[in-house]
Amino acid sequence: AVQHFDRSLCWEQAIDLYKDLVTYHEAQDEYEEASKDHRQLGYYFHKIATEYRHPPSYFRVKFGGDFHSDVKDKEFVYRCKPMENMHDFREHIEAIYPEAEVLLRSDRDSITASNMQIRISKVQPYSADSEDWHMPASVKMSHAYSNVRSFYYVKSRKSIRRQRSANEFLDLWVERHNIKVAGAFPSMHRRL
Image 1 (cartoon, one colour):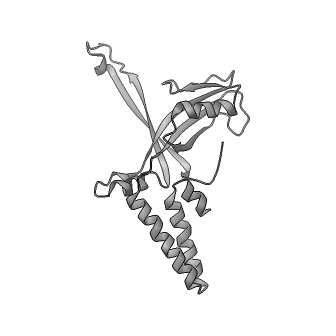
Image 2: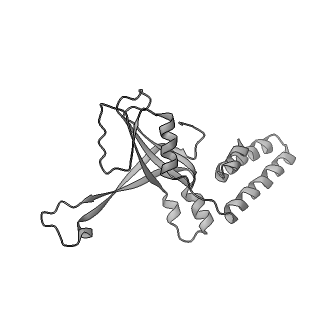
Image 3: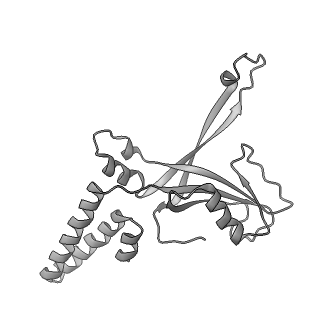
């Protein structure tokens, strides 16, 4: 499992596994193995502190219409590869559900029940720990993309004032929507 976390640059999860191994090896009086585990812990802490990682992309996917009961009328957040864009993710979804109509980031949330529709929008992770400006950038990124449960996305809408202003940007509002997921990211669960 550690090799998978290392390959996917999820070093925080590798640290959690090595901490468990240290506890186990110390309880079994296997001090040579415990010292190897401590060296690996130092290796991953050093990587977090010194190496830059491109952040992963997250997408909110809402299924509507005639889907099977696993996904019908449900929303999911998917963690993608670092720097994966919406076009690549859309192609991936279309390959899995070729009969569905895929809609990208529309400000309307309604999905018609008569056919299969999938609505995809980009979401951003939110972590209160990542707002601490005293942290180095690499550690801040580590907190921002590890054990993430909260996300947000923004939708623009026109203001409902009766009198329109001459400047159209004064009439444009932005709404922030927060999402909290059941399981933290990254995860070993796979939906796609």
